[in-house]
Image (cartoon, rainbow, N blue to C red; front, side, top):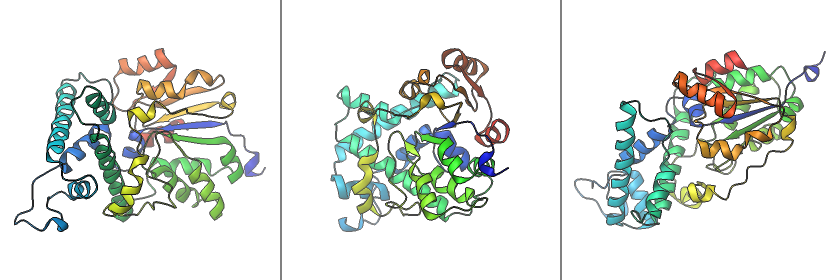
Length: 324
């Protein structure tokens, strides 16, 4: 029997921030991203002072923002105040186990702009900050001393390596709500350890990963290893980041939905807006399964009741080990 003759169910994998976090601890969750922006959004000046062309602030991110958007101290103050509000309010509730929904910086910022509490110029500054920090995390992983083989992505590649390239291409679809490119960068690396892949086949698998809210860019355009100090490149690409108003215009199209047999949510936060965008009702022949790491029994039961998703309170790595 050839590898291609082994039966495989048509499978859709849907990724959230937890998938990147489980891949490597340095990738931020939603709340951690807010904390990271808060940490770097600092208008403390260098001491002794330096010429403006050298960047007057301690924060490299702030110096980039000044180069691109101007040194609008009043706007920076307003953004900082709003960032602190969302972070402190969420942490207050989280410590008391009163936070069921994942925190969303883009939803929060959009609401503040709509309510007149933030200038609309804040949106692009937040986009730039998100891009800068996630790009920096990709760069750090690429340069760091991390084991690139003991993670859920490589375990998934190992399991799919019993099939040939065409079978994988025709039966595996990956959709991610993340901006980073960890899946397409390392799934093909890991898969290549087991089966031979041409450069065209690698490119197809990488380019076929669908980023719902866009990404930092294709790996050919914006290498995974690119340093986030390249502000001239980030300046040209930060608009890719889709915040809440951009997201209202998104139409998520998935061909042949009736042919899918299995849908796996990996590291997904089950935000209602994202669930509605996927439209689970269209998958008439599929079963729904996923991770629900640190979810309570009640929350897991709610996923079953509302969406018919069989979720498990386990890590992404254990989920792929056990359920795929």
